Amino acid sequence: HLIKLFLYVYNSYSYVVVVFNASPTDISFTSPVLRGKVLQLHPVQMMSNDNLVKNSTYDPSSGRFMVPSRTTAVFVEPRNIQE
View 1 (spheres, rainbow, N blue to C red):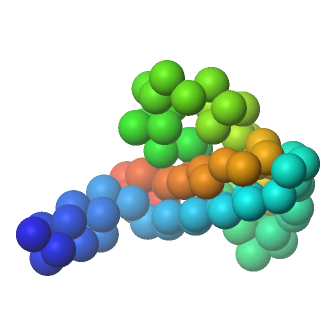
View 2: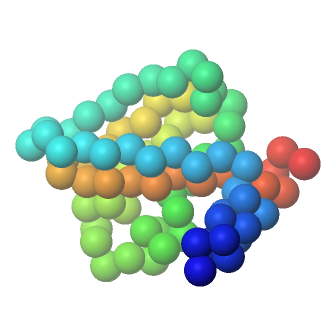
């Protein structure tokens, strides 16, 4: 099962960024390395009933992430965007 999962992720996404925010406050940070990437919140999280995780954002022009308190957010770039 792990091999199938790996192949699915590998074939679907060119980038996967996981942000763990265990703090009681929202965090934001900038990653110059990821500036310009077309990252979006993972589709499962976008369709989730968890409204807190849906408030997680990424700004491609600055490479800035914002993740609410006590939230794990997964940002992905679909493979076909860069290829």
